Image 1: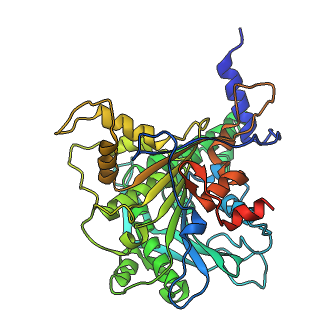
Image 2: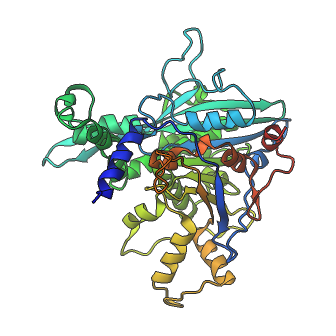
Length: 457
């Protein structure tokens, strides 16, 4: 009798080392569903092109995009550019050559061309050096710098540009915290002596799924998560200042998150609309930061950036990681926003992604299984109840239920590439059109959308 588990494990190992070379399947959008409505396929969102707007004194429409990556090097261990796939996906949608200077350098590192200027970037650090107690009593690990953020500008044409602020936290936290815990085990440097004792595919799986993957999530759910969220808030303040005309060079090479946000409190910024793109673990971090900002009873630049925004979450793990949010303390209410200002979260989830979850079924299930003072254990959500749930959350939650992952072995119909399902979103041209052009009542909104016009020529 064939052991199905062994077959799946072998196939998983094959996809991680890049053995599969079959073409991708056609994208299927099963539905675009909104938590606010009982209709199964009437979700709507604007898309990046329609979010782009001018500010007084300018003629070009622009949207500012905050990008937050997911679990470490599993994105591509051989690719130094986080978000390269996303930037390339946008470039292809507009028939631009992604290799022609559109994607420049890794945050803070030397440019590719010796005579080129470094990509604009800035480091966000803690207010003071943080020390974390370890498993050895009396021993501590130190953390000072938190994230590096750089700026990539995609000039689409004379009337449209996307400005991407990429926030990098992985290397800093790996070097300062995670390496001390699991760096003795990975297949790099002196630890190869241990790692090379493993079978080849087991070694790759151990690194990509655990040492560089799950360790990120475990670390974030602990005390270090507070510092990551502080850093993201600081990065948002820095991006807001840059978008309003005060560039990174004038802010300084390295700034504390409190000081850079204190500077924004003294100014009345006027900048283009912000949007957010997050991958994997970055989706949970993004939602946590937004919820904290909208429930702290203070009006800050963070609120301005979040209001009216759209967040495109690629392969989120919010339902799973929200188990860490269980608390015996009462949570603070999120600020009540008018419908026009309420931010939207669009979860783009491949059905076959091992790590991904849809948001609408999660919040429905949580609502039905939880106790509330007014009504308990109701199994039917009416539209008024859905509207109240959406208002209480502070966000309109929209799911895009997708299928696009390719088969690893064509004759094996019951298994597709989990790696592609988790991180292949930007390689799907039609899915990128949804992100750029938006959706109206569950359908792609391609009216006067430049990306759609270019693809249909």
